[in-house]
Image (cartoon, rainbow, N blue to C red):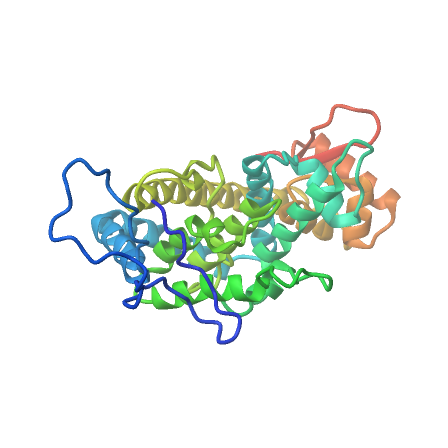
Length: 350
């Protein structure tokens, strides 16, 4: 699928520019009545904008039943998150961002991500640029204006002041991508998200980490009509739906399969967290003070928690936090995951 030339922009009026055949090329010979059979085929004309949209319209029509099923799954997740605590959204965003980091090659584990997001701590061998990219993904997956409001602000990307005169401004490239998505407004948001993801690099929006940006942007667009879910899961349990290759119908089919699987994974995780919360509340009922409920909320919101993290998140003393963590671990509510004597981290036992 080649759509080169679709996103060529005019710097003056910010509209898409399409190559058209000129009729006054006087220096060329006149047209032949019939082309000889021995000549190879000439260059193919670039597909017009309507051809791109038609391809994705046909892809959506061919996957209508599957799309309806996945939309229903996303709707159920949206309703669940709308009625649930705020910490659920943050927890799912951390899981999704960590899984996306493996897809783009950064491979940020949940423990490193938790320390970076909560306390800006990184190890000697950690790639701070990769941590910053995943941290950006967590912020965008937990809230804020969507990409279709202001793509430049959403991506935190601006043109450098010393940009070359012949270079195309990012605003123009982003405008071409947004224009095409706006013309696909009749498509379902899930289809539009898939289309936008696969046209991302062709629009000239790609740079280092661009696949992370494209996936996060697509996840937000797919859930743009929701009130509880900030994003639609794409990578939980595997990112096969983000693989390129094949016509739009095949890409959309893979996208829907993996999105359904990721959504079911998210729903099962929320079931487990909800059951753990109920069990923890019952078990911790004899405890007094404000530390136990605050610590329980932190463990619900974060996949892994260390004692310094819990101290920062709850605002209570290190001694009180460590005492409650030890109490919860002894009763099987949480488990220590590092196996080390120092720099220990705990997660809920589900």
